[in-house]
Image (cartoon, rainbow, N blue to C red; front, side, top):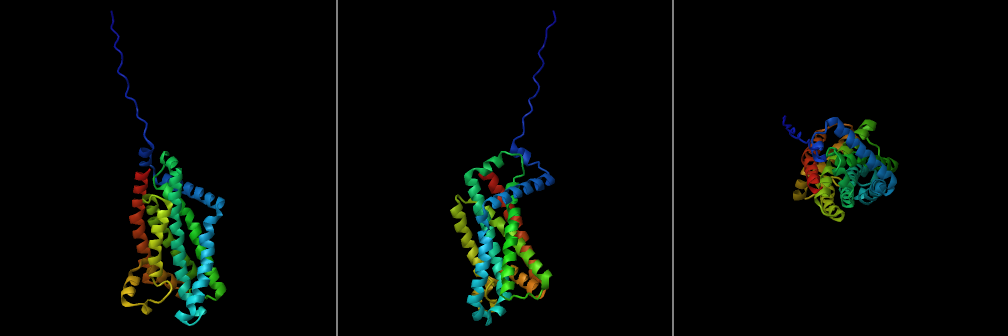
Length: 278
């Protein structure tokens, strides 16, 4: 009599989790997923046009307001003040626009939108970087409107078209890099209101304690020392050199280096915090 021996059960293959799949996403797939998230954010902007208020109304208001209020006191007249104030307004508008990135991120996380993203086998950076890529449209719109208002008021950049385009590109790059700070805040703060409050505390010292609106040599020594190391001051000085003189100075290098450092520090922090939160 032959005894039949039951075969040992085959090892059951465990299905990888979305987190495990996300760790093995290729660079090409990561870029494609980021662009898909950027397209989603762009569609969201189209359906919510109020998201463009801060980058359409604010440049018009701030350019005219600061030029007419401070123009005579700082430079003697508005026309002489425009080469100083236009780069300053560009920097402030970019900062304000990128601040909204963190607020909107926190709102989406509170609504549970990112719970769905967490369950998908996509790169963890894609849901964060996608909206920031879409925000490049907002930064560009704000910069172009600021320059257009300045031209209408009599601003005549000595750097020509290339200098103006270079200044706009540098401003957009600075805004995109600084947006990673506010994106990280959006992942660690508990509410959208707290993100906005913390962001405002960062925004005001960076913009108003800089050379955006007044020359450094008119400030007290202790304040001038802070203004000189303020990263916004480097961006403003670089944009002024590009727009007014058409020259690429060392300030451009310092500004780009500062942007790279911010991205290198806060992009990994934002992705790591996002993974823990979800």
